[in-house]
Image 1: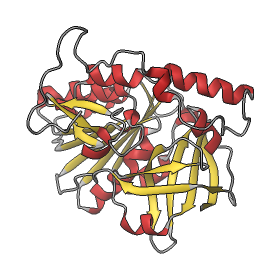
Image 2: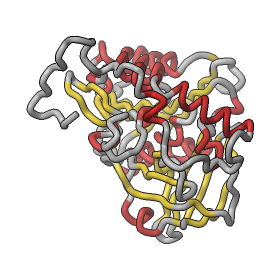
Image 3: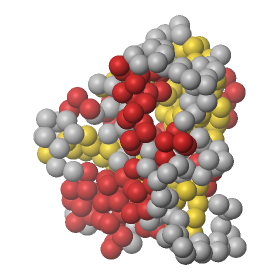
Amino acid sequence: MHRIIEARFLAPDVKWFRIEAPSIARKRKAGQFVIVRVHERGERIPLTIADADPAGQWVALIVQGVGKTTHLLNTLQAGDAVCDIVGPLGRPSEIDLYGTAVVIGGGLGAAIAYPTARALKDAGNRVIAILGARSKSLIILEREMRAISDELMLITDDGTSGVRGFVTDALRQLIESGRPLDYVLAIGPIPMMRAVADTTRPRGIRTVVSLNPIMVDGTGMCGGCRVVVGGRSQFACVDGPEFDAHQVDFGLLAARNAMYREAEKTALDRFVSGEGDPHGIGEPGCRLADAVSSRPDPGAAPPGRPAPAPAASDPPP
């Protein structure tokens, strides 16, 4: 069991947790994540490590209540505990002295971008942070990002904070100003990351995106996070979660990410309505695979046509 030291809401349905995890706090690096189970029969969910303190023996996780398990997790308070935390997992962010680095966090993506932005600053880079959200109430980690950035730009869809528009508007403004940009990291909704990649590609600016949104079990065993990068199949959880944005097949990524949406909504509706177990434990076993098994895999060959042989460097299907 891992005790929750502190818990507080940062925005509607977005909660910050400080949880005891000594070994993970000692070993984690920017960009890595953990797998959390709320209870023994619960779903395993991947969450990026937003912060950690080896001396205090804790890690910080930021959770957005989207599905059943994340809503259940967000009901916990300081003094409660989660069943287990496994990690750190995934490849750490590639931190180097690039020069001027632009770090873009869209919505909850700010929680994932923050530790990498701090590591880039510690490595000697000039860091320009762009935080975007639909409205002011949904902006998170503004104070923390401002503290580790040389410049901070706030963008909201409705103009209630910073400048009205999209993060790509701010990025385009930086590019057109003629300032040298050596590295761009974009983390957020898939359409946002795709738009950032389209903006930087013509200028040849090195751009990295984090494909956390598609991860499921976090170990590569389920295959749910299979993506195509540079024409080759990879798994976001073990080969990433960060990839060259200009090589990611965003069309396939969006299609695979949508496969689980209906099953997640059904589970959440049952949890909120109190149908079955009101504590969210439900029946033994995971039925997510059953719920989506009848759907075609966007990455599979059409019916009646054999699947192409994987490249020699591809992981097994």
